[in-house]
Image (tube, one colour):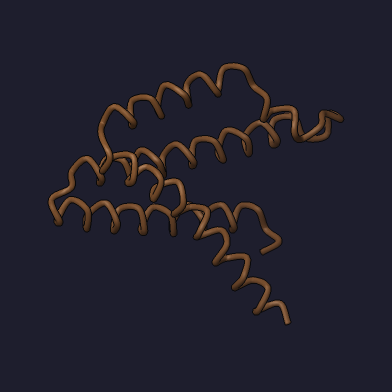
Amino acid sequence: MDEPSRLWRAVALGSLILSLGVAGIAWGLGFPHGALGVLIGAAMLGWIMGYYGFLVWLLRGKGVQRLLPLFNLAKYPLMMAVVYGVVQGGTPMVIGFVVGVVIPLAVMTALAIWSAFTMR
């Protein structure tokens, strides 16, 4: 996918559908903390990707290195606070959080593989 906006929409929609589905299954199986962990993990990774994409868009054409926004000092303490809260929620929430972080990465990987096969 060469169009970033189309890729962003596909990743966001796929991640949202999978995250809600997995959270619903976890809730239905009696793991409400796991469901909450899935949603927190997916939202946190989405926030990081969105933040980085916004800064790259904002600083485009200004000669700023694209890796510079990754080293923002305000982002990492907030992420550590979220992770601390998740760890305090117990094992099901931590497992759900890890699954929630993996879902958007899996969607991006699936889209990359699909795009590689359809480009031929």
